[in-house]
Length: 324
Image 1: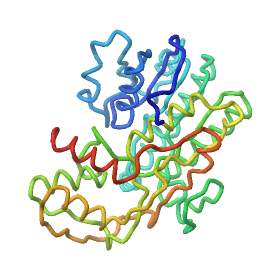
Image 2 (image 1 turned 60 degrees about the vertical axis):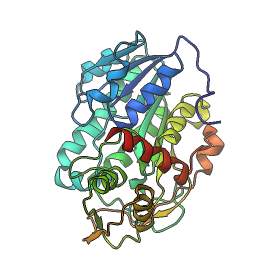
Image 3 (image 1 turned 180 degrees about the vertical axis):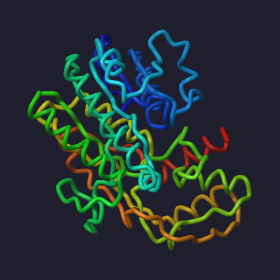
């Protein structure tokens, strides 16, 4: 069924932090398409105003250019809000290794500010972005909640810490929190530019420009590449989930596993180009293999991803062909 048929009371007010980013802007769009009221908070450090420009004239949409590191801004933004979807964070494992202090400020303190503001303002549900990186050096496949290893990067540590705060805020204060461990999300509006760009949009842009992409490592590393509409579904289902399911973290993936070299050849085939990749050194802090066990999210949230990798990548390629 996906998320299109999920129903919310018309009086619901959603706050999407990081709402001008890749995932956040897609969530905003999905909610607005349901006729719901949406506040988008973003400081535009990694988000783009272009992502939300189409919504600016919608009377049910409000853009707040604020920073989650500012508690006062978080307090004001959560006034009268029913659901908070906290997507604001800095991603990228390699960048976190270079900038650990900034990641602590944004991903931990910023998220804590949002939880505290949500608690004080009586928000009904607080759904926040976690990451498959919390599994660290665990070699168990598929990745299952409760079987985490040692984290391998400051980014992963920030997400693990957010989950611990999520547990505490449910236990101590009764705030219904739901942590969503995203597995390698891709799709429309994902930024292909910069040194820390995600691999699928980066490869697509380079191949469409006739450039030779670099694969870090041998290409045999595997990922549970997850189309963005599955992530939207995970967020909306968490908003509708039982209070008994709160205070927990959930895998949000497609439940599949793709090898990076196979993804690369899928992209070259779809684009009709014959370009061999360059193989570079592996990236520090990267997990070797990733594959989500989604049974817990299926059982407790009703999550049932509508898109496997093949269906999602076809839609993503078409979007980039039209928009790059």
